[in-house]
Length: 185
Image 1 (cartoon, helix red, strand yellow):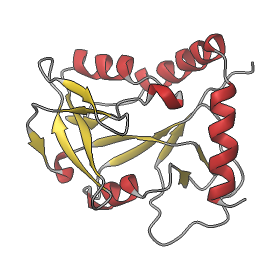
Image 2: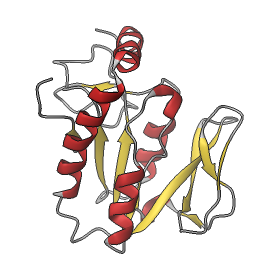
Image 3: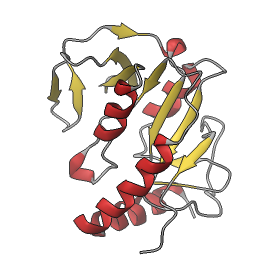
């Protein structure tokens, strides 16, 4: 199936999830994240969840890495060129919702992509080859292509991977790992 069709299907599937189901899925996802070997990770990029799209709530993940004394990085979207700028997220960092409904830091220290060791990547669905379908603007593919070759990319999804995304292209960056709930509902 093509990305545009998958985008429609999985946006709807996510919207159809009940609050109770999401809580169960979150618990399983968090359990997997908290068991990752992070001994070589100093700086981790975590997306700030878009609650209106029922994205995976990353606040517990941020809290976990903060307790492990890791630097947390979040992004700010630049819609003029579909890129992300990255900033350290500290306890004092103020987060505001931009005009597109995206939470972003406003008083934070910039950081380069090459300083990030681990990136948690938002997605709607991925395939068994670890390619992902996002929202279709290419923000994350541009970002991931600028990271160091040693940076690890982990996708977070409510759904298991599908067999194949038909229209993967040369600009798509595969994930190294996908974390999704390993439970039956």
